[in-house]
Image (tube, rainbow, N blue to C red; front, side, top):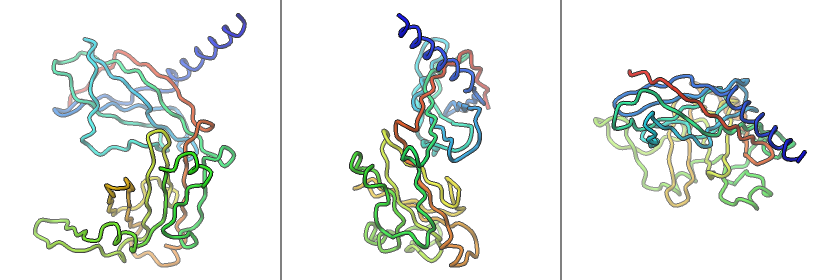
Length: 261
C-alpha cells in the first residue's frame, strides 16, 4: 500500500511539473495550417534540450487534427525554450483546441555517455563515423562524420544545381563551403550537433540526402572571408540521446483559442 501511494505521488508530481512548466506561446491559423507553439521554462543551453515526443490536438468536437509536414520545421531537439508544430485545419470552424502530449527534456553529459566533444575541425579524421563504437554496437544506424569533397562526388557523381531558372546548371564549388558534416539518426535515438556552438550553423548551406543510406550531407558556409586557421578552429560537438539523459514530461492544455492570420 505504501509503495502504491509513493508511486501515485510521483505520477502526480510529474504531471503537475509538466503542466506548470509547459505553456502555449501561440496558436495561429492560416488557410493551410494551424501552428501551435509550446514554451518550456528552462535556460537556453546546449545541455538542456527539448523536443516534442508526442502531441495530439483535438478540436471542440473531439476531432483529431492531422499533423502537417509540408513545411520545413525543426523536428529534432533544440536548445531554446520553444517547439513548434503544424496541423491541417479541421473541416469545420473550431472555437478552441485541446492538446495532450509528452515533451522530451534532454540533458546530455559526458557522465551519461550522451555528450561528445569531437574537438576542432582541423584535427578531426575525415570520412569516418565518429559515433562512439559502444553506442553503434547497440544502434548501428547512427552516423555522424566530417567529410570532404571526395565523399560528395562519390555519393552524388552527377549532381548539378542552379539557384535561378535563368542560370545554367553547375557543379558544386567546394571551396565556397567551410565545413561539410554528415549525419543519420533514428526516431528512437536522435543525434544533436553543435558546430561552433550553433545547432543551425552557417548562413549559406546546401543539404543533400542519399536516398540509399538515408545519410544527410550538410555543406555549410560559416562566415565570409574565413581564414584557413578559422576553418581549422571550428568546434564540433554531438549529443546522442539515451534513457539516462532524457526525461519525458507529460502535458495537457485545454481551451486554446486560435488566432486567424
